[in-house]
Amino acid sequence: MFVFLLVLVSSFLPLAAGHASIWHPSMWGFNVTAQTFPYDNRPVAPLMNYNFSQWWFHGHLDYPPHPQDVFELPAGQNVTTEIACDKGATSYFGSNPGGDIREANNPDNVCPGSPMSEYHTKGLDDLKGCALAIAYKNNVSDIQPEDFTVFSINQTCVWTRFTDFSVPVDMPPCPAGLCTCAFFWIHSQDSGGEQNYMNSFQCNITNSTSNVPLAAAKVPRRCGADPANKKPDAAPGNCTYGAKQPFYWFQTERNNMFEGTYSPPFYLDLYNFRDGAQNDIFQNSYSSMPVPSANQTVLPVLASLPGGNSSDATPATSTSASSVASTPTHTTSATPSPTLSGSPKTCKRNGSAFSRRNFDSSSQSSLHNLFGVNRHSRRLSTSKRSSLWRPI
Image (cartoon, rainbow, N blue to C red; front, side, top):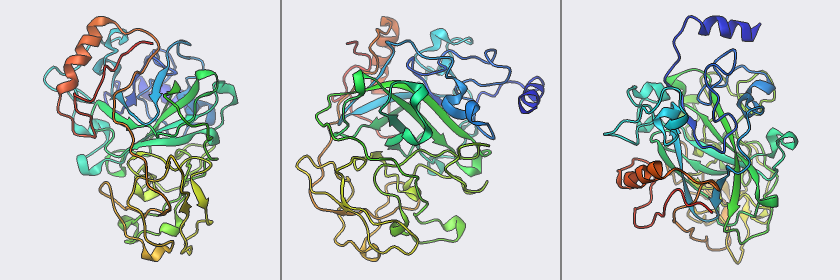
């Protein structure tokens, strides 16, 4: 009945140009169009009130990528993703039914020809962040929602088409050279409904120098300052530290978040998701980990490691939650860092290769010419960035 109603409604409405997705040939559903499903299930379509088979992997498990299309993630470096409201606004417009819709004068535009409301924001201060998560499994039939661990956050997502994510330096190698990753996004409650976004893709960690596994991912806890809900102060003892699961929210099955309609979970300090690489997600990241609660006054203690896969935030001077200063990296609800017993390692800031397959020379040249574009989110200078498409 639910699918029938979706079909009925969609028959009277034009396709929305808004919403947003990550785009890369390594995705499940990369070539799904409006005609593929009996309802709009393109990668950019939001996920809301769906059963598990509909929202998990965006319902695209029957539309896998080519085995050789793999999104490369160099440990300790940045990767540049393409996020857009339509495939035609990306470098992959050649396989888009509507062709090339990129804006020549603003190639970083996420939704060419559309207002900001199309990608659910009122402006730069209303962005709620995106996440990349990884499961160290390459057989998708074995993967469960709890297997994904968030490893990188960009708090200014989805502001620009080209969006950088930092990869933790201590990421271990993938089994047989292949992992499964996913892009997650929940937008501001001020700019749309209770919508979730999930797009999964094949990935591989390169340049790995560590074999320490990721810790078991736990459910994030709302612990930052939350003035909209009459909580002006952060509660650091209530945070989930270390490896955290993505948000699964507002579906009919398998949710791990149960926030209300007007208090969505966000990939911000509000849930202790710091901007950048999540460097404390490994089994040896912490020497102690108190159980979080609203009354907890003791913070976790980061381990002192030779390589230092510790938090990149300013070290705290005490393990007491009441004595730690808050240092926000974005616009909302920063939470204090755990105590550091060791110096953080500085990650490299080089470019990265995305795919094992060749990219056509015309598109490669086009991307190269765009490297000088001024971008609003975190970006690398052109002198430090190598080619996005460097086939192996």
